[in-house]
Image (tube, rainbow, N blue to C red; front, side, top):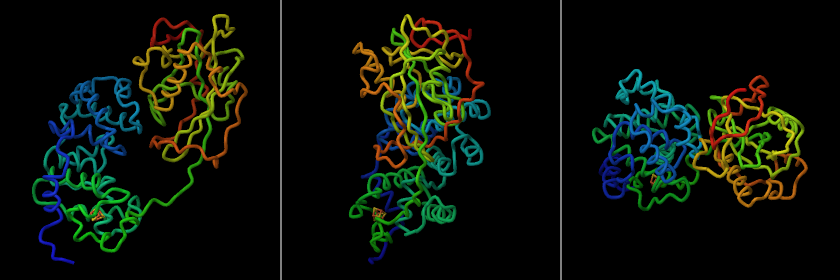
Length: 418
Ligand code: SF4
């Protein structure tokens, strides 16, 4: 091996000068608020995906006070589609805490930052380094990969012992100045060259002393997470649609998956489509079915069966489940739809197309008007996008408020309690 003439950090900083990213929206300008929001959005999500969300978010919520004073509903509406909705809820809670206890400023010390919802050690380090140029290390997914390879640290990085070793590596490599630039350069190395597949070691500024490269271990490091089969759960989503193209949605409980987002009515535990429809619409209804959709969460996979209950003017439905947390959406005005999980939004898009074609949903399904059997966990459905939120807490019976069904006045108008 040739003699290494400069430190890890100085080689990285030199490389970054010409090859790093300097025009990311949160760098122009780089304020503590913009750094914080971008760091939360970038957890589990790639830069290219985050950029349009970040820009829209900044246009509406330009500072801590504006974000703190906005409703959670509106914040989640701007978050919808990014996934991992707990991040959006935590961002809002943290803004309220900063507004109340820190004069609407992002704290510039580790102890106060780490107490805020949604901020762990690495995110706090990233904010302090990038927004305040303080000497703090980070250990996000990209950096873990770079360090696991460069130092040939074996073991799955999610294990506490491996984490401890990687943190030690991260701190040992810190420079004595230019912490913001160094942090960005490390992130850029992980995202541009030291990629998960096919790292471009020939262009890497720290290749000279990279142990994984020397030992041909780049494909094995970092050690992958031990595989565990994700259980498959089944649930039913109900599309209650009236003859004018309005669909009933309700707000999810604040905790749990899709927390505080708007959702189609979902079944409770072993509830059948008929009893779900009965709970929301009253009398026994004719149901049509669409093929199920799948969505992966961190700890399980959800198969959602889709049943459609089309209400007509002479429908004998006397009541629908309504509450302060329900509303009728106008399918023809998607711009007014509130924040909802991407898979459910897609279903509404499909219902909208069906409605545009002046066809009943049952005409557009795959011919199934009988209730389809749920598939089993071993079926080879297309792998869905993962989300980190926790399992759905079942909607308990006492959350179900039966009320007389009124025709919606306008799109998105809330249904009042009868
Ligand atoms: S040499 Fe290759 S494996 Fe090592 S840090 Fe650079 S890009 Fe990553």
